[in-house]
Length: 423
Ligand code: CTP
View 1 (cartoon, rainbow, N blue to C red):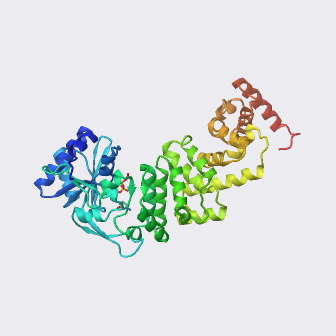
View 2: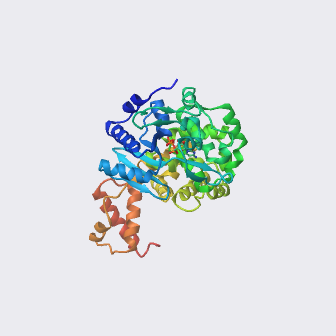
């Protein structure tokens, strides 16, 4: 039974977005172009999930079309000539326009060769049935669903299904996408698709490091990466990233708690640190090379995670003064420390790491260098040494007030400048 979704479109999006979509439909008709909402926007519309990224496919020149639409609406536009796409904004919504195209793959793992096509060809190039739905937005046909692969039924049955048996061979990143959608939507990878996924696991070896890393980062941008890591382990996808990556109870605990500790902006970094924590140094280097992150900040954070794990391993489970906790950790970045805090088996060490992250790292002395100069200390290295001693005393709770710091500063200076002292 064909169903019209015009009402759903009008309910799902805010009024300015609905207006934009309808105006786009009118303009397309006047140019004799077919025009469709596609992909995630349609999937999420049917699922009644909010999605602020709207993809519109045009059977015609998308950039030229979007520029004309922007002129008509007197709104700004960003065009990406290289990709043949253009983006308009309506509040927090981003509406992307692209030309319908067909894609062919010269060899597994290669990027596809692309040529313009109609909506049927465009839907055929897509990853899963739930993402291969289109809604016509031209007047007269507004809200008509194009469902060539039973995507609507798969949405109802909560299934992730590829369109054809060579889908993962064409593009093995879809293996990682399948897991992401399955866990995000609480769907299940359909039986035959799961078999194809297993058959084609080795195709992941042909995917470039940059593309693999992009998919891993998308995993870590999901609300529950713990579930994704578990599933990726079950399907042996995790081991395609590195043979020594595994899910276990501790990994699950660390990943599940991470969300409480990281702001969304730094969560992805923390999940990378958690991912690598159980690797040895040499294994980490292999993984970083595979994901092409051996240089740059992310690689550095991963290396810090393992370095700190090694340092803490040598220290055992003993009592440490706050100033010593500070100097142990001050050169490590918060995600690397947090990863160690989430995994460490000693309750005392975990508490030390938390204490540093929550409190000690923000501790500052009341006196600064300029105050010390005013007290008569010559500018230079001595100031740094005194400030360091003052901070240690403050961390250990030995001074609390400005007066206390001044007294301590004087006594440190007299000690440091006492010729009898060995410095
Ligand atoms: N797509 C695909 N194969 C890929 C990547 C993308 O077929 N390897 C298609 C899918 O139809 C997908 C669309 O391109 O729906 C847009 O891709 P993307 O923006 O990554 O996904 P969304 O569907 O928008 O989903 P979300 O952003 O929610 O992950």
